[in-house]
Length: 271
Image (cartoon, rainbow, N blue to C red; front, side):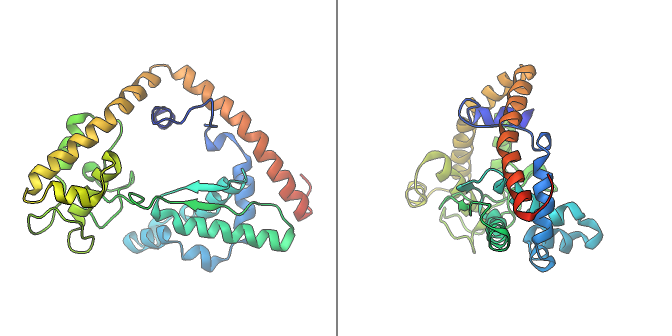
């Protein structure tokens, strides 16, 4: 429920967009299995998320579900004949895999899927952990101290930003290699304030990291305040959220079932 409430609070209107729970539409797993059947073991093994997880915790720590996840993600996209897929920079590889799988299927079995394109922001497409600014900010991080949450209180997010790892020196300048911590905070400020990184560098010239962190915290808190407030309102009416998700699943299933039917027909399978 929390994810649905946050998406609506962020501006995704159920009147214009289709919100649903993936597991409520069985066609995702149906097409996901087909994507697994046409994917090569080598290309699946090259997906960085699986490689990183395996490298950190050993082969036994990485589950088969993580290994096959990119193929399910491809099904998520291809089921709805998406033109564009808005993703973060870390998902670029998965979009390329989706394009490869769709092209491969179309070549072997006839035109079935639209070849999607990734839509990746030029700035802010990848935000890094506040405590480990060389790693991406992730809900699955080992510690929540480096992760900004929409539903966190203003005080909690302010504390996280003011405690963010910074770099040697005092200059507020963008340099991802030498100053990853400050560069990450500059990216966050620019993404939410609409100011350019260059303008922010000029604005904070001669000021220290403390002043800059306080400014970033203020921007983040004020940006998230109305979103959090709206999300809390929505969560107070869980019945409405459930209705939205069930209605969305019905709409999604109509499109997804047509795609699966076309896929099965082109494969020569009985639906």
